Structures are given as structure tokens and as C-alpha cells.
Length: 230
Image (tube, rainbow, N blue to C red; front, side, top):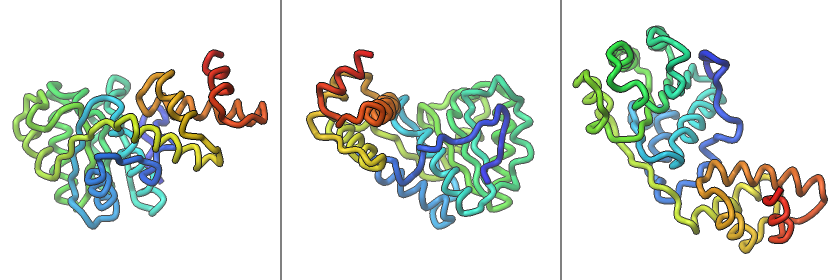
């Protein structure tokens, strides 16, 4: 089971490694999968711009580890104001810890010391750590130099955004998983008439799925146009 941390935070049901459309990020996906399986590097660091899939990978890793009955904790540090650094003090017994948006606490000494301690404890206990941020470990604005160096001990992957064609392929794949037929012209219409990041596109696809079921209509361009206007 994924350890329930403050606010009842848990990974999105749709965030699975199997549903991650890798595009140019196949090596990062393979490294995360291997880390969960205990067959790859124990510490993996992902970085990139918003909406490149960092949270999807960390949440997907957490869910997969939970399904394999591993002790796992997922903590989105974007929510750090709702809890104290001490939350990290008893995570060393976890087999996998996923720390999302580490850059949110960079420069805050109490958090940096807690992260440094957790890293050392996981290493000593044979635990694994997946971390994400919006920049590389070298550019992370930490005041504790040893923390930056430790975050870069394992492989570091910069996540690349999907191209338009890759987004169309991803939309088509996600539609198929829902049992929907999404023609190429319909996928292109969604891409060019909506917010273009994948998280938003998938939310639109979910709305289209519900609308299609309610109206008993196929996902044609005219139908999609009507739904998007609403």
C-alpha cells in the first residue's frame, strides 16, 4: 500500500507507468521501472519543465510499487506548506520513496537537512529514491552543497515534452484504453483547439468520453467542437 501522507495525498488512478507515453523519454521510463523493480539504480533524478510527465512517472512508480506490495511513500513537495520537514524523518524504512518537486523546498535549511538525512538513511537501509525537480541537481538552488551532490549520485534524466505528433499518438492510445475510437482528424482537432499540455488534453479526453457516452455519439470533429464550446 502507498503510505498515506498528509492531506490524504495519493497518486492519480490514471497515473501508471504503463500509460506513460514516453516519446523521447524512453530511457527515463526504463530507469524508473528498473528502480521500482530493484534491478536498476537505487537513486534516480528526473527534471524538466512543467507538464513533461515528472509527476506521472513518480505517481506511476508509487502505484506499481504498491501493487507489488512494497512499502512506498509519495510526497508532492509542492504542498510542503501543509506539513513540516519532520515528515521525512521516519521514511527510512520505506523500500521506495518518491519526492516530487524537490525544487519547492530548495533553499530552506530545515527541509534540506531533512532531505539530506533521508538520503543517507535510505542508502544505509537499501531503500530507493525517485526525485523530481524543474532543474538539474547542479542548478538546484540548495544552500547545503552535500545535498545537491547526493541528488546527482544516480542517473539524471531531463524529460522532453512530446511533439505534436507524439501527443496525437498518446491521445489515441489513451482513447483506446477507454474503449473509444479517436480518429486522427479528431485527435488533431483536439490538439489544435485546446490547451496543449498532456494533463489538460487527457482531462478533455475524459470529458469527451463522458459526453460521448451520454449522447451515444462517436468522437467526430463536429461532436468534439460542440463539446469544447460547452
